[in-house]
Image (cartoon, rainbow, N blue to C red; front, side, top):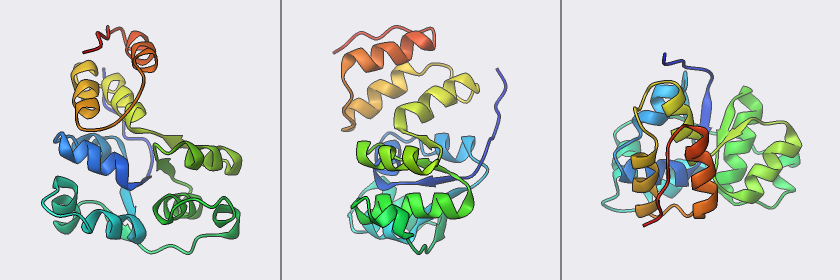
Length: 166
C-alpha cells in the first residue's frame, strides 16, 4: 500500500492525548497535510502535567490557531475544545478529528468531514503507515479510549484482521 496525505486536519484533545500516550502522534501528522490545534484545545492539553500530549504541544507539535466559533457551532452547546475544532474545520475546509458523539453529530449537520481515533488508525493501516491496526487499537484501548468489542471487531474485520477481547 502507498501512503497518501489527504487534507488538513483539526484535532480535538482526546485523540491527541490518547495517541500521544501510546507514542503514535505520527499517525496524525503522517496522514494530514497539516494538523491544526485550536488554542482552546492546546490550553486543555497544556493544563495536564507530565503527559506526552502536553510535552508534544509544548514542543511545537501541530499548528496552533485561534478561532472565532460561529453561531452555527456554538448553538450545539459543545465543550470549548469541540466547538473550536468544528469552528476551525469549517473556516479552513478541513477534517475534524473528534471522538465525542455530540461533536460528530454537529459536524455531520454542518457538513464537516470527521474522523475519530479509530478511523485514524484504520486510515493509517489502509495507507501503509502501519502494518497492523490491531496492536495500535489495543494500545489506545489500554490507554483509556473506550469502544465496545463489537465495534472494534467490525473495524478490524474490515481491515482483514481479527479482534480478540482481553
